Image 1 (cartoon, one colour):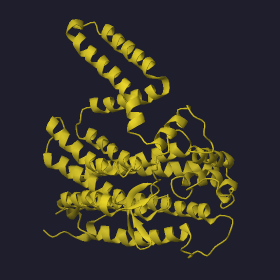
Image 2 (tube, one colour; image 1 turned 45 degrees about the vertical axis):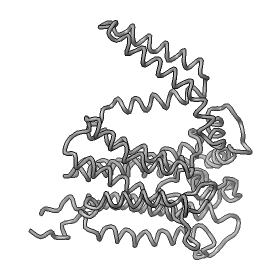
Image 3 (cartoon, one colour; image 1 turned 180 degrees about the vertical axis):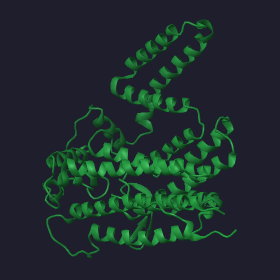
Image 4 (cartoon, one colour; image 1 turned 90 degrees about the vertical axis):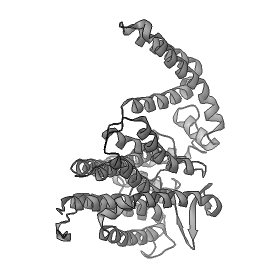
Amino acid sequence: MAVSRSNIRFDWLTIGIFIALVAIGWINIYSASLGTNTAELFDFSQAYSRQLLFICLSVLLIIFILAIDAKFYERFSSIIYIVALVSLLLLFPLGNTISGATSWYAFGGFSLQPSEFAKSATALALAKYVSDLQSNMEEFKHQLRAFLIILLPAIFIIPQPDPGSALVYIVLIFPLYREGLHFVYLLLGFFVAALFVATLAFGVIWVAIGALLITLFLYFKNKKKRRQKLFKYSIIAIVAIGFAFSVNYIFENVFEQRHRDRFNIVLGKEVDSKGIGYNTNQSEIAIGNGGWLGKGWTQGTQTKGNFVPEQHTDYIFSTVGEEWGFLGSMIVLILFVALIIRIIILSERQKSQFRRVYGYCVASIIFIHFFVNIGMVIGLLPTVGIPLPFFSYGGSGLWGFTILLFIFIKLDGSNYINS
């Protein structure tokens, strides 16, 4: 039976939130890049004019994505993924270096960052692999292959170096828990991260003592089969203490100096309000200036004075905080939370596992960008160069998130079709 395109229904609530975020983002980019001088709307030497062009091109991109048959994204997901990996590899001989990272292709006056587009490709490939299994994720070989799909782009991105973008790919592990991955992997990840940060904050000796005491507490608390579990708890203690002793080596030899500085500032081990911590310090001042209702659009003193570097990109939320205050900031936060929750709700109503997994991938990627960027801007997390979705200046970021979201909107719309 033929399929009628009239049966396709797009979720207008999700589209409406997308439009609201893009519009509010552009308004704040305009203010952040305006400076003290007025300029014409279509002055393409200004960031706000270029962003307006990127938004217009996004509309064409959306039309193209929605016009393609939904089955295309599942059928050719592996090819799309391979093309994305090749585009990341070719950066090393052909890429353009910007701000110390070889993460861009230069085309005349424009630059494209393939890692932004590879997110959609990786999400499609992961969804395709999991749906093809026709089973849960309990078998180790299936888990290993899924992890490999996630980690390959991250492995190619880290040497650029761009640890912020690489971090985003790791969050694609979360959708696997919906499909049956054991919770122990999540606990292990949180434990490793907590152990790493605790070692940096308190030192190896105190962390080693703490790990030993916790292991002993768990051992004596479990009254059953203590002798049988003595070896198990001993291994856990040895691995934890061994990892703690390796943290300093990893921190000093794997991380770059700028990353070490940012961790030290967040942990309170260094105070550098004029050097590496200048951006965060000025961002906090800008947000604090906003109060409850803000200073008004284009009236922010920190924003107008260009005190916050890169304020129209990674630190765009500081403009919201200063000019729109607590109320405006809460509206933006509510929009992002509403978008993530809506995507999860739509994912749960999908008839196919492929669409459900892809939906959870979309929600996870948007969440990690949102969470890390806001945490970075208010000084709770180290600066890692992660943009705010649909909000920060940049064609690659806007187009990458637009592709990511509207592929899901297309998949969800075709969910209603009865063949």
